[in-house]
Structures are given as structure tokens and as C-alpha cells.
Amino acid sequence: MIRVVAFGGGHGLSASLRALRSMRGDLKLDITAVVTVADDGGSSGRLRAERGSLPPGDLRQALAALSGEERALTAELLQHRFAGEDPLAGHTVGNLMLVGLMELLGDPVAALDHAAGLLDACGRVLPMTRTALEIEAQVLLDGNVITVRGQHEVAVTAGDVREVRLRPASPPACAEVLEAVRAADWLVFGPGSWFTSVIPHLLVPELRRAIVASDARRIVALNLAAEKETAGLSHADHLAALMSYMPELRVDVVLADDRAVGDPGPVERAAVALGARLVLAPVAVDDDTPRHDPAALAAALQPILGSLGARSTRGGRHDGDDSRGQG
Image 1: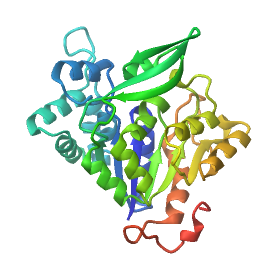
Image 2: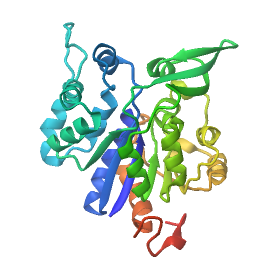
Image 3: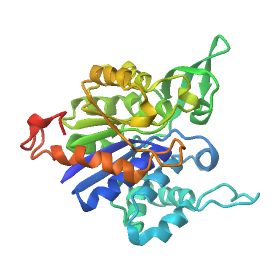
């Protein structure tokens, strides 16, 4: 069994999870999704403000991505968004269901595990912390550095994001996440919104320490194009940003789309600075939109995960450890 822990949020994490789910027929994967909990926009933001719950949207998307094939209609229902202008408008069924389960069971992890059972999910979805967070950024805008608060506002800022931080600054990590990281064979970071979905995992002190201490190999999957929050950052800059928040981070593989990268030189040098090798593969959809194709992403990830295998015991490796970085 190969234990994979994927970090992120939103559509990027969903693409990774759909790719991992599709590989389970060829590889024996134990999948855990670790999701950011700072969303304050849309339905999630409304439920967070009105009910005091963890924002459910990214958690819902992760559950839907891991749903079993025979539960396709249930997954579609989970994603159904109410139209109109009444109080339900804009909410998704899954968001309402998760908030209801959290209130009923009194624990977000128990709620997510129950929802996963309803969907026959092929993995586990966990919040990185049981505490709803706020993302705050220092942004350079029109020559001035200003503070932008809230995940949504940071994600759509027109300025240059210089630094992000969490409020509260040191939230307790979810104990089940720490356990999953300790047992993992692979840790997968990205794709996803860099400052609001990927880097926040590195800002939770307990989780950061667990990632550093983990014996797992690490993959960073790069985005296809810059988003508003990363406007002006190259692919190499994305890797440099990871290092700036976690200088002790070491990575085994950086996966990037061959067409999106262009000249691979700068990205390869940035990967080497993290201790990684660069793997280029066509992982984008064919319609020229900057979206990952889960099937193509699976095709790129499968030989990486499969060739190196899983650890036989805690802290040890299977035969083939000398292929680290070669797969």
C-alpha cells in the first residue's frame, strides 16, 4: 500500500485527487486529502459567518473528487448549487450537508468521515486544522504596501503579494493530519492557488514540523498559469516562494506541464535548489484553458509513485531506495 497525502484546496486539489482516484486500479493507494480552511467567499463565507462553522466548500470539492463510481449521482447532488435570489441561492447541497453534519456530530473530522461513507469515497478528507482561519497578506499596490485580509480578497488582489500569514498565527494542526503525514510515503503539494491554498499548510507550526520530520518523498505539482494572486511570478518563482516560507523543505520531484513551462532551464534550477528533479509532462486539458486534465495528470504521476513504492516500515524504505529521484 502506497500512502499519499495531498495538500491544497479548491479546483487544484480536486484535479490531483481525481488523478489519484483513477490510479487505484493500477496502484494500491491510500489517499488522504488535507484541505485549507480559510475560505471566506461565496456560500462557504456565508455559512462560516452565519453558523460559525469551518468553511465547507473546499472540503466538499475534495469529497466529490474522491467519490466512488457508483455514487456519481450523490456526488453530483453534493455539487448542486441553488439558483435564484432566495436565501438558499448560491449555496450548494454539499455545503449545507457538511455544516449540518458538523453541528450534529460536533466534530468536523467525524462529519467528513460520515460524508465520505455516503459517497463511498476512496480516500479520507481532513481539514488542516479544526480552527477556521483567516489569511492576511502584505500586498504592494500602486507603490504602497497594504494589508489585505481574507482568502477571497487575497486571491483576487490586483497588487503584488509580498507575504501571507494566518490568523490566528499558530492554530493547532488536526491530529489526524499529523498522523497521516507521519505514515505517508508521498506528500503532494499543488497544483492550486499558491498563496491561499498551498502555502498555508506550511504556516501551521505543528504541520510544518511534521512535514519536515516525515520520511515521505515529496512532489510539487506546478500550476499551468499564474492566477491573480501570483501575477508576475514565473514557475521558478513559485518554487522560490515555497523555499522562502519553508527553507528547510526538501522535495524529490517537481512536476510541470511541458508546454506551460517553456524554457525549462530556470524551473530546473529552482527544482535543484529544493533537492528535486524536474519532470515535464503534458498534464493540461486540450482546450488551451489553464486546467489540469486528471487523466493526463494520473499518467504523469503513476510512474513516479509506482516506481519508488511504499515504505515497508515506519522510517524505512522498500528495496529500490537507491532509485530516489530516478523514477
